[in-house]
Length: 366
Image (cartoon, rainbow, N blue to C red):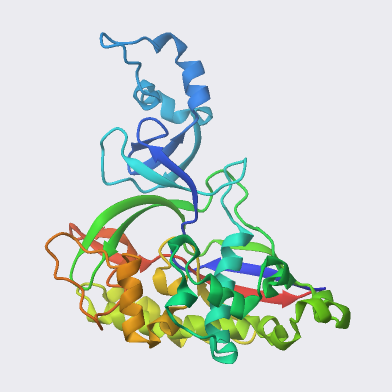
């Protein structure tokens, strides 16, 4: 076994959802620019006498039971975040970040391993040279590209190269809600912003730690007879370099996209700074979680190498999403046409200030 201490430094807001949507006045309330996650059990116990239905038979919402003095009682809240959703309506939604039983945010090892797998597939493509045609993609959107995955990593889960790569969950903040902010997100095209979304996100400069292990026994002579991994052993020994090669190519393209947009100067500068970073041999930039985009979770440029096939895939899987009235997609049009970004108010106008999901990965061999 080769074991590495692993550190993940957050560079831009990261959101990894737990599948829950929190509702205003049910699960959280807003006061003075902060968002408070309710401890519903404690509130209902403290406000038991007020739990009476109105004339229509409706009980008051937990958030409506709170008084000014209640905000000084920490027991009524699980945690609080800086920032507030843009909607003040009851039942406004907020995507929840994944947390442990103590409400401490963490990064699942599966999320990080998925991003590593994407980088390895993209960099390893030129070595394996899988045959790309319509049959190699398949017809099921949930399992699209599985034949290509088998060519790259192995014919089935028992013979998959990444059996040799173990990634632990990564932990950082030690208090409930620590490190989280409320992020206002929108979908950007080169000329406009729309589709507002509110979510819990880990703020920049928060660090998480864990471990990464490469199981060397799966490359031994006995295992090689069954698994045939040895010809791709370099994929794991060169992990950091391969991740950085994939990220470097994406960063260059993303910088150009934002430079061509209107009002996205802050994000363009962010990507140019990433492109200029001196990282060394133990560190790599990568994008994880919500907002990584199509190009951060697929074979990316390899699928676009055959323009006619790619247009067929876009049509078959209904990948082109545009608002009503937008012109129809034409072969060769840029894809994807939009990005997701964090927004902030400046001079009374919402401005795109940061992309989602960028982190700095560092490995130190034990």
